[in-house]
Length: 126
Image (tube, rainbow, N blue to C red; front, side, top):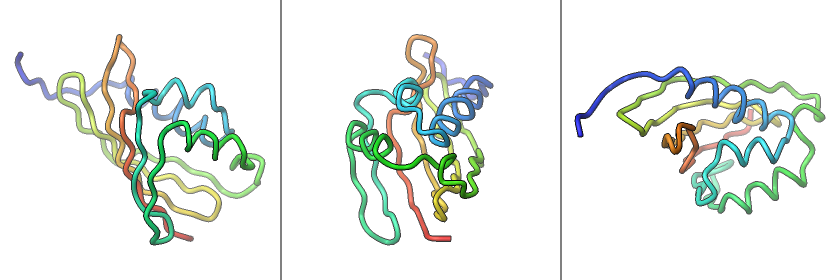
C-alpha cells in the first residue's frame, strides 16, 4: 500500500454536522453516527483525570441539559486535520458550558464513512 497524504472534505463535514451540531443539541443518535462503538474518551477536565467508554459518555450527554438549551455560548472549531490514507487526526476546540475543550480526535474511514475511534481531550473553565 502506498502512503497517500491527502485531504478529504467529508471529514470536515462529518465533524461540523455530526460532532459539533449533535454535541450542541444533545442528539445522541447523531453522536452514535460519528463515534465508533468501541471509542474510548480520555483526558482531563478542570485538572482531574477523565476516562469513559462511549456508552458512559453518551449517558452523561443524554442526562444533561444541552448546550443549546442552556443558552450559553457554544462554538466548535476545527484547528487542523492530518490525514494519511484512511486514517486522520483532527485537532478541534469546543466552547460549551463555560468550558473550553481542546480535543484530539482519531478518525478512521470505515465503509466510506469517517468515524471517531478515540478522543483525547482537556477541558478548562472559562
